[in-house]
Length: 118
Image: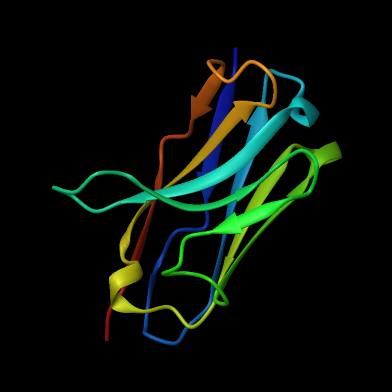
């Protein structure tokens, strides 16, 4: 059974930093590209960052220079380091993985809430 479990969400103030974690189980993690998405109620889920199995990363313009995605393959972990948080970063953050060859094979986590407010 495949599971993705996010943690680390919190209520913080503007300018603070936060690290989200996603632990994956039930599959060969090395074969999956890893991403983070976020969603505000009433809006579509939006891309935040991706880190491929080959080590290539990409970020949404809104978070470039502030967020960093990383992974630890032997622990099946994905991180999202967030700094200089802004109120507009408030959302539910989701971990997402997709097989690097069979792109129809993908999985979502349940989400973790990040609230940025003064």
